[in-house]
Length: 282
Ligand code: AMP
Ligand code: MN
Ligand code: MN
Ligand code: MN
Image 1 (cartoon, rainbow, N blue to C red):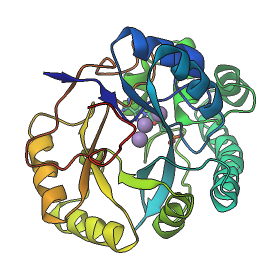
Image 2 (spheres, rainbow, N blue to C red):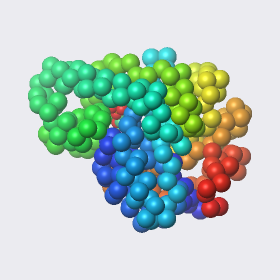
Image 3 (tube, rainbow, N blue to C red):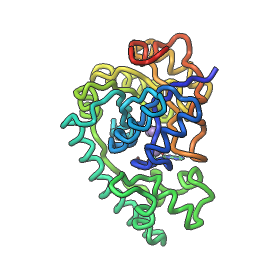
Image 4 (tube, helix red, strand yellow):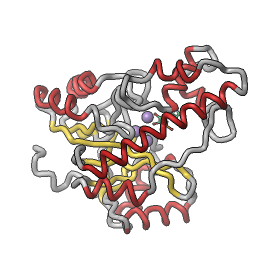
């Protein structure tokens, strides 16, 4: 069975390839019935996406994916049903977006030290005006320059710790991100926990802190989780009395491991994060 619920996706406002409108249209074509747009550190696409969703009969969820530094590691927190106008959230996201520009300069300087020039302008050329600048945009520039076969290959040789183009960056704190989301009336979800390579003890500590700080759900089903990770994180969510979420993390055609509307169902042990969403037609 594949599920028509997708609570993690990206548009051109962050590092997706489809505009908010085209993303929603694509989701509709693929049979998605409940969709969250969760751009990195930006909520600018939500209004357009919501308007388009209405004309396609899709139940739309206001979302965001916040970049967080936890114990010197980058983790992502998805906020669902947020109020994008909540001042603390809007201000916090603006601060992260501003800091991304400083980081981008640092990344470009690092690349220029190994003889790769023009990457700052090149990366911005792949980003939307007014949207965020991210490693994905640098990756697309490096592919364009023939320095890697594809974006996946870029992240093996560049832009990661110890490689050219990496620039250490401090994101929001876990506490702030959860306060902004919860304060705005939203639900905080720990995104793709299988990607963090934390080790068992640190993962348990993260889940504990996440819960203590008001976190509500774990993304159990997502494109970057292996078939073994799904039941593993389902059990952990259950153990910590957290709800479970599901999202493709779709970034556009050819960018993602999984198509929209093709996510497997959550394991039976999970309580879905949408279990009490009355606006959804079950
Ligand atoms: P940033 O938030 O600027 O550090 O950029 C992170 C983004 O880069 C993620 O959201 C992904 O879209 C992309 N990314 C990170 N690692 C990889 C990878 N190994 N392959 C493809 N895309 C990646
Ligand atoms: Mn991304
Ligand atoms: Mn992420
Ligand atoms: Mn994402």
